Image (cartoon, rainbow, N blue to C red; front, top):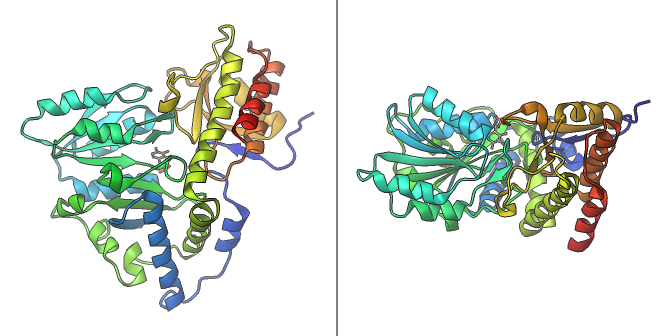
Length: 389
Ligand SMILES: *Cc1c(COP(=O)(O)O)cnc(C)c1O
């Protein structure tokens, strides 16, 4: 008989669990959108979002998901035929490259499969571009499909004095891993509300540097124009029309939890410690050549918000833990064999008990389905939590 009744555990890399406090903050009728209190709250949220990204430069908010953030950035950065070098380390980087290409950008891919980027290869490629034709280097900080994490300062250093803008997707990493946009020299940063930000889906953000602002393309439709939003005074102009009223309350609550209550450094460290807990369990399951393993060897190049696991019969296992335990794990998106890969998210509003719950369900599934696995995974996970306490 299924033991799935009770509180569902959704361990997928977005949308991530929304705290009850954030839902409650959003649960209200719309106030007068022309009155001062909401306009003030919006300004406060914009300032919080800049703190979150580590920037004092510009921010344009959009109603839309992460894909809308990609489009918004592209509309300001590229005319048809402009060259972009897209560094791809997984499914999300590859689909971003596809989107840019479909909008007329001359995309060149520096492809690392599902593995982390090697900054040296980027440096070598840019060194060949003597005329500085490449307008932007584009990459994901965390590719959520491969669960790799790019070394952004290393990438920036590899760019040397090449004039390209550095454009980073932090949709699965902002609020989970360090981001210091100004210190690191990121020119354009893209994120969305429903992952590390612990909010409802439906808002995307594009932060941009003075350098990027000065190089915006001349013809941008008024709706996507980042200057119109970043330089707005009236509330409706920030959002290109009706503001997402309830989401503004949700963002204010969530960002207060992250920035002022737990604290950004503590939030980052919690994500790292929860990630290590998952890695400890997978390492134990992999012992003895079971075929269960982490695809990214270097822990420093693994995401803090989601872990990809290669595992024989992963698809069967995912179905089993959902049906029998009420745990939903991520699909093996972009893996060579998606039926033999899964992802465990530890993103946003996530604690040690949730991670232990997900790992415990996987342990039960491996046992029930007789998938060969090494022992001691839950002990190893618990020891990881104990040692980092
Ligand atoms: C989720 C995600 C996206 C897409 O965001 P949507 O809100 O689903 O459009 C893009 N890039 C990365 C790295 C993501 O994790």
